[in-house]
Amino acid sequence: MKSALAILFVLIALIPCFGQENEPVVVDSLEVVIDEEILAKEDSTNFSTYAIASSVEFIPGDDRPAVIRDRLSCIEKNIPLHYNDRIHSFINYFTVRDREYTRMVIRRKRLYFPVFEKYLSHYGLPDELKYLSIIESGLNPKAISRARAVGLWQFMYATGRHYNLKADWYIDERMDPEKSTDAACRYLRDLYGMFNDWELALAAYNAGPGNVKKAIRRSGYKKTFWEIYPHLPRETRSYVPQFVAMIYTMNYLEEHNFIDAENEMPMPYDTLHVNSYLHLETFANLTGVCLEDIQKLNPSILRNALPDATKTHVLKIPSIAIEQLQENRLAILDSASKVGKKELEVLARNTEGSTYGRDRIIYRVKSGDVLGSIALRHKVRVEDIKKWNNLTSNTIHVGQSLTIWINPQAQSTSTASVAPPKPVQPIPVPDSKTYVVQAGDTLWGISKKFEGLTIEKIKELNKLSDSKIQPGQTLIISL
Image (tube, rainbow, N blue to C red; front, side):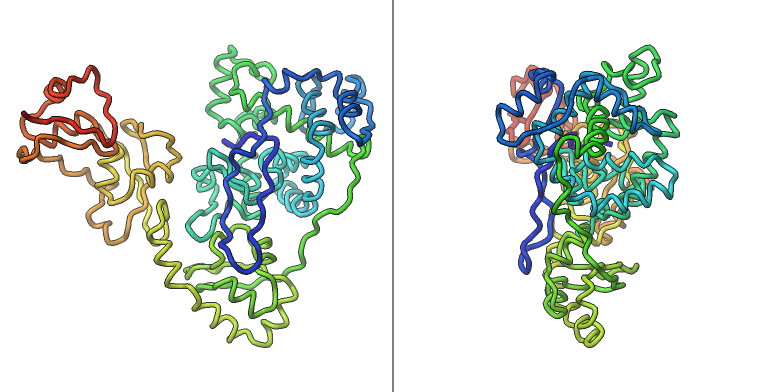
């Protein structure tokens, strides 16, 4: 799985009570990424001295290699906890250099560790895997990486969809602690079944199984993480050592002067089954609770509203809301079913990249296709196609499968997944002697739009030395 691969995630502030949409914030410029180059600049043998000299806080703890190695051997269970300089450096990072990050995850662990432990036990997986979410997201259910991985377990859209995590304009189940943990356990189970090695499975969770298999081939078919280490992506080389270091840190908190205080505790809640539109702020006002509390209990709800649905949504509500709800249930639900509904539906249908009210099809790229022509054919935006398929550029290849969400009314004319499109017919040269390049255009595609025009002719008229063109560029197409 492609995650932010960051040690420190910014604490995403929850939306203030009564007011704004409960949308996730992308972790971006404030991320602190710890990689080989950063650690290489530090002398791992002098961290304790550094801490005493630079901080008023005394940090006890024997960090001699023999001590760390022995402690790791004492807590090792199903997943190997090797000791080396790289892991030692990360241990010192968590216990000395960035103690605030460690304190943050200590505060949050009681919110999520019981959920992780329940599902890990259900699937028969090592309990130590509960620490992986710390490396992925800092135990932040609304974390979003630069690569658009989402939630406690940092699922990309396609991987999440494969494990039945639905994501639309209103709800992103990758942010649901229960559902995403269940999916993460199934994914980790599948990766272990693929490699039969937990360190390689963890590496594959981070970089994808394809990259791990490639590293195995390049290493001469070696079989362990540390043997294929030099051939892995840079982020992945840091990923497993971070995981081992975090297991050590969370098991030896007292030895490093971490006081387990001021923990965030789960909020008492009840559940409400909803199968129609519900405006959360109105519901909060009428039941006497804070909208922020409902948001904390339901991080997967993006817009402070639940949509009309064919299936029932299970809404967690603070227990103190039950008394008001029991007394005035019909009136409260009726009022909350009307506020802002039309406005949100209009916004949902017109927001860039939204899948609300659309039907999903799979389009297989054919020879001559470009994103611009595919988008035009299905009446969607190029940027939407890129978002739905996690594309970072306009490059596509023949045979590639693309997910496209089309408007129902356009489906009758967008049957590309069933029958091939009609070939583009050449048209007469218009009065204009120039053509403005559109997103996704190629010289080949432009030449087919005008009768008698060839790629060579375009290049000759515009004195082009190659076939590179840019959107907005004006090309001469006739003299």
